[in-house]
Length: 232
Image 1 (spheres, rainbow, N blue to C red):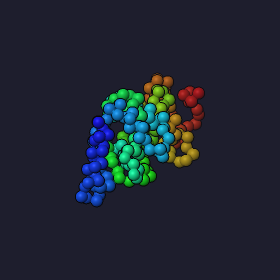
Image 2: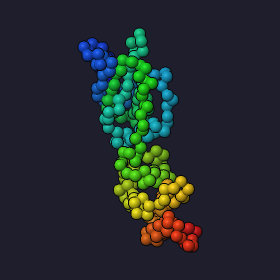
Image 3: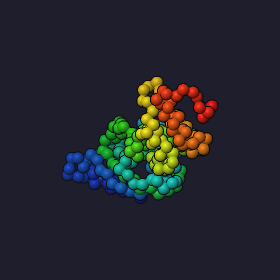
C-alpha cells in the first residue's frame, strides 16, 4: 500500500542524522488508480481549483501511453500535530489517472514543511517551442492548425513533433527561413494565421507551391503591383 510506504519514508526522513534529509525525501512509486482516488481525498484545502483543461491534457497523454516517470513529483506533507498526510501537488495528474484507470509511476516527494506549497509551480513553464527546439513562429501556426482542424484543444510537444516532420512543418520552416516575413509590429504577413493559411493552401492544392511562395515573398517585400487570384 502506498500510504504505508509514505509513512515509512516519513519516519526514515525524521530519523535521519542529516538536517537536510530531515526536511525532504524523494522516492519513486507506481500508484494504482484505486490508490490515486484515495490520495485525492488528502488534497490540501488551500490548493488551487481544478483546471479541467489541464486534466484533459493529462488524460490524453495517459491514454496515448505518452506518460512516463519524470522528475516532477507528487508532493506530500503533514500539518502540525496531524497524523494524516496532505497532498500539496499532483491533484490534476491523480484526477486524470482515476479517469483513465491506469497504474502510473511517479516521483514522490515528502516535505516536512507544508508551507512549501507557496513555493510550488512558480517557475517558467516550458513551451512546445522550448521542448522541440523549433522556432516559435513555426510552432505557433502548427498549434493553431491542430486546434482548428482536430479535437486537440491543447497541443502537446508530441503532437507538434509529428507535424514538424511532415509537409506542413517543412512549409512553415520555409516561411520562417526563406520567405522571412517582416517582423515589424504592423506587419500582417508575419502573423500566425497567415502562415498557417499559406501551408494549408498548398497542401490542399488551392495554389501551387511555387505560386504561393512567389506571392508571399512579394507581399512581404511590398513589391506586389496587383492582387492575384489567390487573394480572391
